[in-house]
Length: 131
Image (cartoon, rainbow, N blue to C red; front, side, top):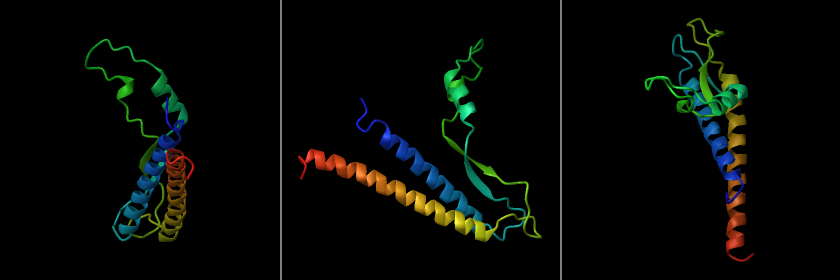
């Protein structure tokens, strides 16, 4: 039986996503003048691929075959945006877009932190007997 019904685990995964997104955005901003640097973004993996990877058993006819369950189960991945170019030096970082994404991600992260704090405050209230 889970104490919060999976809510804390979901919030934790969401915080990990927001942290990875913040890391990608800050890397993009710090490399704004780097020649041929391609902006990175954090995106969710395709839900179908995850469902298939988690539900299928691989029949291994040789011990050197890789099992399906050895795949990284992170619900997001960091990708490079190679299809655009904004600057003459091959760099595709748009500082205005990155700053907007950073602000949006900070609001998302703070909302998650507030929600986790609320969960723990509720638990603390129950432990103290409603006081």
